[in-house]
Image 1: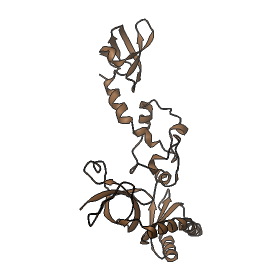
Image 2: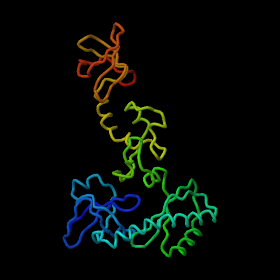
Image 3: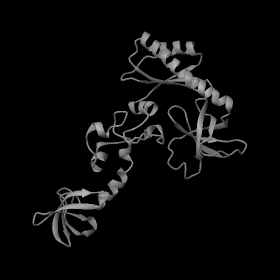
Image 4: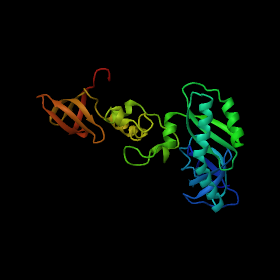
Length: 274
């Protein structure tokens, strides 16, 4: 049985979806799938080959039910139009119950099996009364799903500082771990306002080239190392990692920028580096 990689749901879940009857699908085709949550609308990304699924961790499984037809498309539009009303209703009950939470969004599933309510909260919240009221109001199962600020940006943000749609809402299926070490190695500004994304956390894109920077850095003499070049000895003051160049202080106290390939040998690395 053929399988396809399909993106579906408000959180842009990635699933490996089987197909019955031998029907084939091109990239970008809109489909109705049956996931572990119920019937949902989604988009085919590619065929599930060994190469395309190599980097998919814990992808959900399911079934492609059919291509999105005219009636399906109309229903998707109606569900989208009803979301604001559902958000307002949920917020009304949250306020009435004085719950310490921030309502982010709601997601009515295509098949009507459930309504997923996404929220932020610092502490544990007792949702039993809220769920009871929402289930009675919407006549469906209510699923409360706590998310983080990066997930909130994934759902609500539009464009990043680069002028392009935010990565978390386009091609990222999981949020990569990002640290200040990555920003420092890439010589990025350490101004939090400039290296933070729409979620207020470090930008995901700081992770993309970090492995390349780290691999090149390992091959370069460390800052503080004493090296020998064709022009004589010098001390490494700085590394220009991507261009693989070194800023040296020569024995006569000049500062020169040279390709790392001109280093003949390393006399001494910075103390503590061996």
